[in-house]
Amino acid sequence: MHLPDFLKEEWMKKTEIRHSIREEIPVLKKIIVEAYTPIEPILGRKPRGMLETEEKILERVENKTVYSVLFEGRLIGTFTIKENTNFGLMEVQKIAIKGDMQNRGFGSFIMESAEHIIRLMEKKKIIVETYEDHKQLVDFYLHRGYKIFHQRMRKGNVVLVMEKNLWRED
Image (tube, rainbow, N blue to C red; front, side):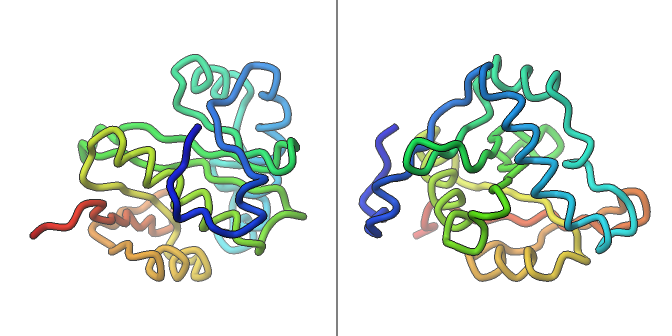
């Protein structure tokens, strides 16, 4: 996939984002479960990402909504882009990066890339959901220009729905 010029760092040139394939499903599941495991103590229960199944990933692979992130040819992350039917907006979800690759800029890289993909779909807004208690992730999205526009409860935890305008409203 061709990505825009915002990818200027040398390591970014060694990173590829493409639609996931069936053969990657077991690794994708492992990456997602591993990435969501540290959230369990924050919530006091297992987050949905820890309950990921190969069947759910297969469905997303077949629908071409799940992406693989490869660094130097090694699968290190994943994310899904799909329409959130409650809000009629495109949502990035199941964002996950292998533990040993976290805190190296890949989260920002994934979000920039997802936003670019959604712009190519000619959509004007993007949403993400995160738990209010996951302060580090809330701050990450706020720093990237997302704003909280909806809240709801999920199994005793507040879920924040955050949106970002992808096009300037001149």
